[in-house]
Length: 113
Length: 116
Image (tube, rainbow over all chains, first blue to last red; front, side, top):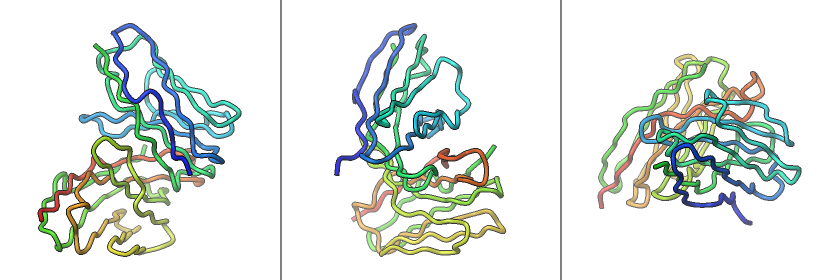
């Protein structure tokens, strides 16, 4: 059974650019969440989708956005990149509508220069 | 909002010893408490979880205990092995009781090192 797939694995962008990260959940999973992981702030919740609806959003600026498609695949977008956006971005999926049983992908390592 | 504190930040043990990591949470509405293990270059992996209607749960060498009154929960690893070396995160969620749905609030993590 394939796990959560995130692409690309590594990304280097310049300040001011925008970036789109992709997440393919485990087959059958309808809930997808995104987290930002940094050494200083740890794991922080970005947003969560279920059946194409954003149900919850973390405390991040409007430059961070996301969406979920009808096949449950999800993308997140960061516009006007800042140096502080450098982080590991993790996607997690689960079968149900709750936080239990989340399976994480290996993440996308974003470096902003 | 929810706040989760995790201690210690680093833990070093000898192979075969036990390891205990503790977390406290602030939101009394939290009802789901998972533990994740993260190895280098990988995403967090769920190793055990507990719901608020259960006081203890065990899975082979791993156990989790929950004290709702004190709002703290702990991870216990017995007979540690070198492959247990990783970063461990606790988390809390209010699930269906509030508006957090799929939101997990994580502790800061514990770097566990098991020496052969």
